[in-house]
Length: 238
Image (cartoon, rainbow, N blue to C red; front, side, top):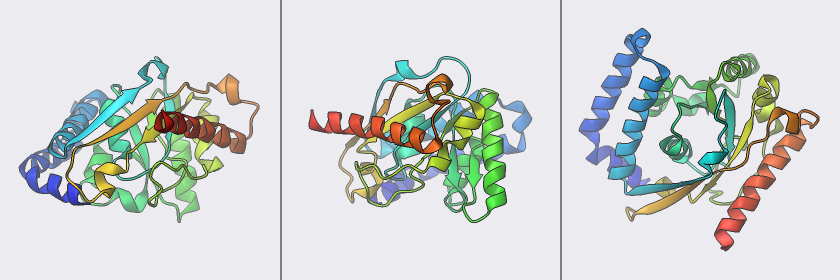
């Protein structure tokens, strides 16, 4: 948390600029493509990483599907997770985020800028609508990040069980599922330190529809989790 406060303090004028820019884009949305929005978002992420002494190494970009939409399913460690993925994912992508968390200062403007989807876990109708919207957008070629653990709580590099329901969007859209292994992603904002930190993002080989069409959502969740767990173990034990 110390690092986040430090970043806000040292970057305050730049943060104000990006908040203004995000608001301006939203008021003139017809003049900006998704690529334009993503470029602005990554600019803000770059400032955060530089001023927060954060480095993120990426592996497996060759595994990302070249065409069409897909959904990335990472393990969840903390506030930096989506930011870390976006910082190393060159093509525009966005995120499904908990409704309450999405309205926190800065996060609210960031999610709006990326045209992310807000999921209200207390409203079943909202959940159904969100699944339908994400499914439709992925079919149209958008790329999403969905955290199948549903949340995080000091789990660090330990991976909790994946919720089968998180895979409904992929199943309904028949899109590729890209497992993403995050390593040390908790360090930027959980450790009470300003020492430089390095996180890792591993894009693993995707599961295409033909690979999982005969599997249940629970089986898909378990297979995706297993691939991520194995990658984390292999890297940490090396």
